[in-house]
Each structure stands twice: as C-alpha cells, then as structure tokens.
Length: 238
Image (tube, rainbow, N blue to C red; front, side):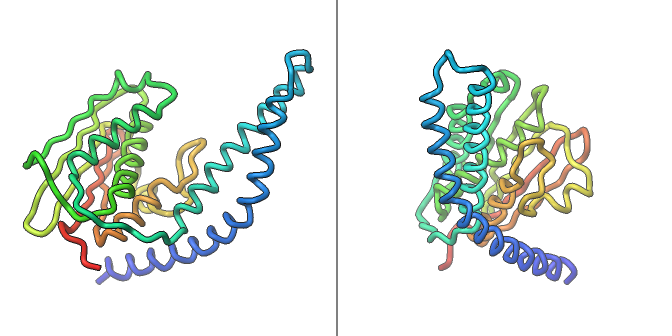
C-alpha cells in the first residue's frame, strides 16, 4: 500500500512539473531559435582579423545557445504528448542498435576502449510490442549514464530475461554507484549530479517505460555500480 501511495504521489508530482516545463519550453523556443540563428550568422561573419575577445564572445554565445536549445528540445520531448506507435520490436536488436548509435554519435571515443559491453539473452530474438524509437531512447539514455559513471572504464552488462507475459531487461554497470539520497530522486525532472546535465534523461526514461505499461527500478551501491531493471509486457493493450 505504501508503494502505491508513493507511486501515485510521484506521478502527480511529475505531471505538475511537466505542465510547468511545457509552458516554459514553448515560451523560450522561438526567441531561442532567433538567438541561435543570429549567433550562427555572426560566427560566419567574424574573420581572423577581429580581436580575440570578439571571436571568443561570439563562439561562447553560439555554444551556449546550442546547449540551451538542446535543453529546450529535451523539455519539449519530456512534456509533448505525441502518439505512441506500437509494433513488433526485436528487443535484442534494439539494445544493440542503441549502443552502436551511442558510439556513432560520440565526438570522443576514448571511452569506447575502456568499456566492455555485453548482451546476454535466453533467446536469440525477443519480440515485444513497443514504440521502437522511444524504446531505443530508453537504452540510449541508460547506456549514456552508465558510461558517464565509468570514467576509468568498466563493464556494461545487459541481460534479457523472458517470462510468460513479460520481459525484463537488466542494465548493470560497474561505475561509481549512487547513495540512497540520490536514488530517491533520480527519476525527478531536473535532478542531476552531472556538472552539465539537464536532469531530464532518466525522467524521460521513466515516462517512456510507464507509457509502455512497464515498471523500472534501480539498485545501487556507492563504489560498486548500479543496476536498472525494466519490466515490460510482451503485448501492449491499448
């Protein structure tokens, strides 16, 4: 009963934050696009003969506008009620594709040689009903967080466990782990322990899993890593 009340409270709190975030994001979107485009034009117009302070300032405006633009995009993605498109999805392939996408999109691949990625499954193909784009984002976000937690390298192990009507996926890393205090808040929007994090990655993951009628939990110990467990129904009921 306690868990039910806690989950209800969490859902209402997330809904309230989502409504506020949606309004802020929509108000910021148009002026931010104008600032971004103006900074883009200025960057092309600034020549080598310009003073360093001008070149550095324009570069800073452009990079910060790009960063905030990414934050607003995450906000809109978190709050936007787009229709989910469910179809048969190969879970094994989706997980592998998410990891490969992370590799391809990374500007710095120095982490790749330090991370041992593995995927184990009781079946060569695990088919579930899901929105494949959003499900892919779930694992992309979880993998990104795991790699951030393993700056010196480590193991990223994914395990698929099939039941009669459900499928569970465990994503385990050997990173720095989290305290109980942090664990209580990790799915809250805007809560982050990263210096440049938006605090929306795991909130988005939570929303996507819930929209799939699934559950997500996490176990972690400081200095010993974290394990996220996602349980999804095999078939989605509209």
